[in-house]
Structures are given as structure tokens and as C-alpha cells.
Image (cartoon, rainbow, N blue to C red; front, side, top):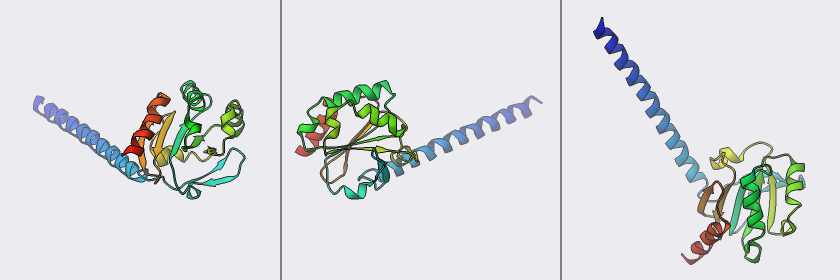
Length: 175
């Protein structure tokens, strides 16, 4: 009887281990696919803050800083406040802000920044919740840095100092 119980325990543990390994392998494969997909700025369409359709097909060259955020997230507010107060708008870096928050909330939040009216700044509303699937991250804030050829330089998940982000652009231009 002890032998049967021991065999059942071994089989159960083995099956659980196989399920875990399969789940990890699937997750790694998914991350690799996402990594390949965002290596170059992917093509996607959303509406801008004025409810006009906008597609990344219209972007022919970078550099581009793409930030995924939510206006009610404290870390996002801190990062975007630093970003709008930085030297970003003195450079040739284009800024694309993506949020899945309600349009009114986004407009109200961004309206507090005078630099938001800059022609190199676009705000997109992700009403279909596509961004997380496309870029493989639910983390807010997240930043994706693309060079002049719209190839991914670096990605950051969570709140980062703006100097770190801007320095990544500077280093990429030297390479």
C-alpha cells in the first residue's frame, strides 16, 4: 500500500513539474515573439486625443520615445512631469504617449503641460487595449526608445529617471 501511495505521489509531482516547465517554455516563446515584433516600430492604429485616427505607418523616421502610461498612476504622473520639464523638446526626439484611460481624463491630465502642444508630441488613446498585447507589457509606465531608423534601442518597464532615458538616446546616436 505504501508503495502505491509513493508511486502516486511521484507521478503527481512529475506531472506538476511538466506543467510548470511547459508553462515556462510557453512564456519564454511568447517573450521571444514579442521581442522580435517590437525590434522595429510595429505598425498599429489608434485614435489620437482629438479622436482622429492615427497610424504608425505615418512615422517615417525617429528618434521616437513611446511611453505607455495612465494619468491616475502616481509613477506615471511623476515620470511624465519630469519628461515634460526635461530638455526632450530641445532635441529632435518625437514623443508618443499611449494610454488606455478615458479620453477626457487623458486630455485633462496632458492639458496641464504647456509642452504638450508641441508638434512632435502625439497622444494616443488605446480604447481596444492593443498596446499590452503588441508590446508584451502591462506595466505602467513603460518606455520604448527607437532610433532614427525606428529600431528599438531600449525598453524600460516601471518608473525611470528621465536622464536615464535621454542618455540612452545619446548613447545610441554615438554607436
